[in-house]
Image 1 (tube, rainbow, N blue to C red):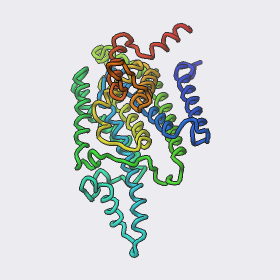
Image 2: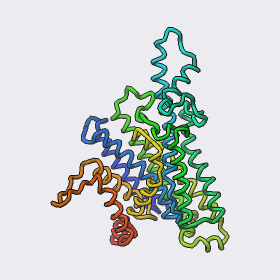
Image 3: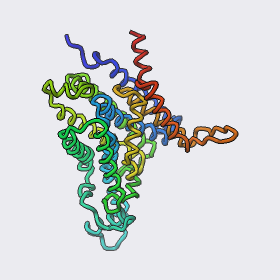
Length: 388
C-alpha cells in the first residue's frame, strides 16, 4: 500500500504545522482580536516576511534544485506588486473623485470622471491620460490575471530565448540581472506609464474596506500570505519529490549527461523558471498592499541579490532553509535598520547599525559560504540525523 504524500515527506507536514501554529499565535495576540500584544505595524511586517519567504522558496527551487542562479526573480515579484497596485490606486482614486464631483450641480459624465481620475493619478508626472497598460486597471479580476500572466509570459519568453541558446552558469546570471536592470531603468522614466520614480502609493487603503480598522485588514493580508506560503511550499515539495524533481536535480548536477539520456533539458528548465516567476508575482501582489507603496527601486538588481543571499544563508537546496534564512535575515534587518538595535560605543568609534547593517549582512554571507555552505538548514539536518 502506497503511503500518502505527507507520510513520505514528514518535513512538509512539520513545516505546515509550525506555520499554522505561528499564524494562530499572531492572530490571538494581535490588536485585531483585542489582545494588543502584537501591534498592527508588526503584523504587517510579519505578513511581508511571509511573502518574502514565498518568493525565497521559489528562488530556492530555481537555484538550489535546478541550478539556475537567477538574479532577476525579484523583478517578477515587483511586477506582481505593480499589477495589483494599479487596481488599488485606480479604485481608491475613483472613490475620491466620484465623491468630489458628486457635489456639482450637473452630474459628471463617465468621461469626465475618467479624465479626473487620470489627472489625479498622473498629474505628478505631468500627464493627464491613462497609458495603454492601464486598460484593465478598473477590474480587480483582470488585474489579478495580470499578476500571473505578465511575470509568467516575461519569464517564458526570456527563458525560451536563453535556454534554447544553452546559456548557462554565470552568463545566464548576468543575463537575468541585465533584464532586471533594464526593467528598473525603464520604470524610472516618467513616461513608463507607472509614475516613474514616484511609483504607486496608498496601496494599504483597500477599496470597499475604508471603514474596516487597519488591524483587521492587516490580519486578513497576514492570513492570505500564510495560506499562499503553505500552498506554494506544498506545490514545490510535490514537484521536487516526484520524477520531475529527480530530473531537475540531475540537471543541476550534470546537465550534459541528462541531455545525453534523452531528456528535454530546456523544457524542464523553462517550466521551473516560468512557474517560479508566477509564484514570485503572486508573492509580490500580497506584499505591496501591506507595504503601502511600490517604486522602481524595489525591482533593482540589488533586491534579487538580497534574495539569493537569504536563500544561501538559510541553506539552498532545502525549501525550509529558504524560509528560515529569509525570515531570520528579514526580521533581523527590520530590527537593525528600524533603530531598535542599540548603538555600540567602542570609545574611538560608535557603531550605528543603520549604517553598518549591510556590512554585517555581507560578512555573514561570506562566512556562511566559506564555513557553513549548507546554511542554517545544516542544523536541522544534523538534528534529523541524530534523531534517526
